[in-house]
Length: 322
Image (cartoon, rainbow, N blue to C red; front, side):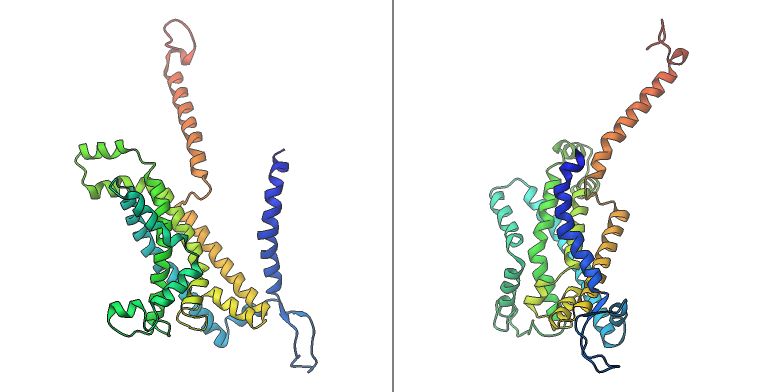
């Protein structure tokens, strides 16, 4: 019965997840037909080349492009996630407080997250234009869409503005599960607000925070549309692995594009695995499911210890205490 009930979900997952992954892996082992340099004949269809698409990525100028994109992807991920986590926690603490107009503040903070990424990128492209709001506020003329640090900074600002509310939303959900009695007891014990935040808030909100950080890590590693629209796909300072895969596919080099996509898939999978294993992010609620079992086991062990400590080894009878 369980297999029958789960079969529709498993079929959908196989069609939209497993099949594309297998197809991409297969495509990465082939190259498109063309003029054979040895024979001079034109070959039609795809040609099996094994791991040549992967080895070509790490040789010559292609290697420089790959490592530049790998560095950009990693840099954007680390920088954006750290900034978004700090701002998201601050947003959650603000939204959690009881004050007049809290509903308006919550709605305004969540608006950036509701805007599609492409629309957000177009908005910030207008802000960072040569005669845009950013230059008007700074009183200078910075070409934000050209190569250099300004392009990187524009992507970080736009991504932080859009996705920090996501972390704030999940952290806020975790804050609302903390009983107020815990903070009242801490105040009675003389704990300062900083001590309450370090000793109470962070440990109790850690499960929700880790899940939020994990989701943002995986999302930022696949960053594509924001730098593509905001700065452009040909700017080396903001090129990511996803953009390189797109550029290869645009030139109909589907085998090389699939190889880039496969490497990115492996990178994302390794980061997710290490994050879950090292930091213990409870993504599927496994820890919550284990808590009742652990408590039941402790109660059983405690009952067995009481029985063993009773007279006559726990045998019922007068004066046995059972």
